[in-house]
Image 1 (cartoon, rainbow, N blue to C red):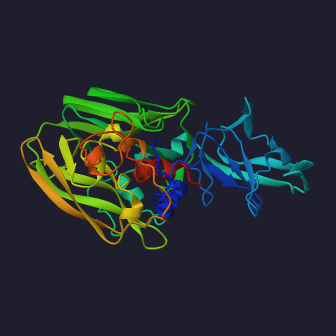
Image 2 (cartoon, one colour; image 1 turned 135 degrees about the vertical axis):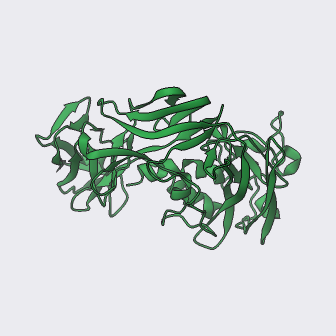
Length: 403
């Protein structure tokens, strides 16, 4: 993933780093330490729910009060609810499962550290009490931990259980999550060994190249299939029915997401073209060409977005020392049949701090000597992830891994 130089827009950069891609973790029962579980998804301190058969592999342990790493100061001792294999713990039976965190004599930063024993308790949810659903980028962007200048609409994604209409021939990323059926609360699981599959005709499913906890589907003309999600334990659930849509399509509207930091500065992070069929159903994956006069763009699956009707946006290719005040850029979505819509994207970047700026990698030309700005192709129509502010593509992963 490309990132902007440290002098770019530090407030927004830090905000995005804090909300993207962090390792799943849970806090101990008495709030003494925080234990990371690499590869785990959807571990939440407020619920502590874990699907039966989910391996948890404790790694780094951090003192909650000081933020200091104290892994060597604790031994992990599972109770009888857990099966142990390769330093990972798997609970198969519904109910509470406890990991003991037993204090050990140790030093931290060359000084003696007094660890205090604690426990970490999770609630194991059986397979038949869980169902699978999907995480949509719009829902994540409106998460209370993220501040947008204006909320993005959520009436542009299918209701739970409704078919997903995908343009014939399109590729799309689906982000599954597990939920307890009784109350729809998210349940933790582990992506390692998990896989998507399709039962029906015309849909192929494989792990995403961007994130192995996503399902990448390719939808052929006439397709109608149920996509399912299977964990390494063998537990499997249907995720959604996927139906190919051959058009005709209508470009309904375009909207953009602009992220705001704690100081009121903002940055464009993405946009979507809402496409509908003749019946008024939302259609994903219609071919869209994205253009802008200023913004650098990362459209579709190649840019880490769900489908081609989404685009990651950023303003990373201009020296922040030369840009201040309210900024405007036009962003146009154009369909194959010529339908188009242009919006005015408005944001207020954090001013540069006067230090020398280095263009991010996506701003450099083929010789590696580009200087940033439109002359180096930042107003592009294709490309990979577009720098630090395009970490919006990782927000779905952040929602999963944030404890």
